[in-house]
Length: 328
Image (cartoon, rainbow, N blue to C red; front, side, top):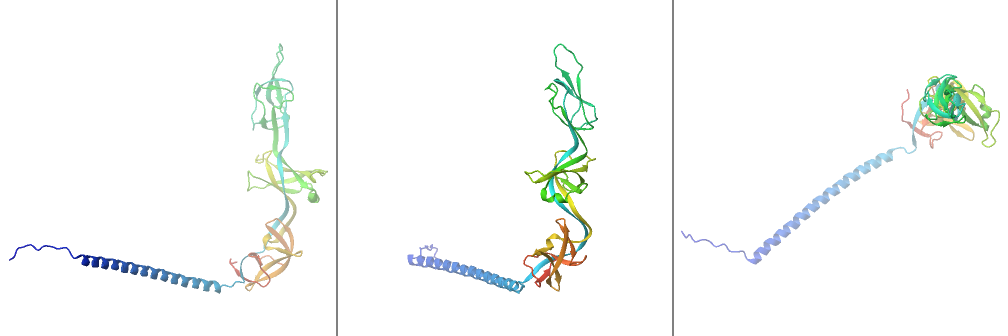
């Protein structure tokens, strides 16, 4: 056996170039194939989306464009109060500023804010400032029963009969002072009922009544001052509070009432819409007092009857409707 080694010779240059060209062509074909596949996938997705859009469009076109979506409610029997909304300030029923009777230095305060005091009770002591003369401390007495609202001076302060020492307020009952515009004065009378609302208790309405009416109208503001009286045995109403007042100017018990937004007006007449066999039927009504949320109907609708309360914009007599809520 010939054990001579076979010498490995390099391929001819032309052969190497041919293989490189084949490799490049193969890569081009591969990339082109991948591009076609991607393009096919995109086109397929586009066709599917177009099919879905066509279905959505068909469903949209199938909807009735002239049908209104509405909500309904029933007329209820309610006690309604009509009121004016005004603003005012809470004041103590009685209050007094306490002053010393002599000049000198404030020896000490005997009370602090919130302390209950009785008439003639000493709230502070004044040391008279006269050289060479010794006096007993001069008392500063309370002039009424109540509580200390403010203490104005600290011990050692120089005071005179014009210097305020403390404020005493009687707040078992409080006053609410407000201005009523001249055009509403004909609706105001003594012992008239009212409700007071303050920010500190937003869910609470405090009952009050009119107990003082000014006999004159301010020529600058064209309004008159009235005062309300309210019980404050729980001390929740504080002097100085800003308040909203609802002054009752009319009341009706057992009224047929509907939401105010359901009653429309045109040419001085009021009307509502009621559902009738898939359409809206316009019905003229007579209105009474309103409290903002509900309005009395004195004619045109009976208690328990259904009416349209939402979706009224553009609604006309005979318009097709679809009721969104189900009434019992």
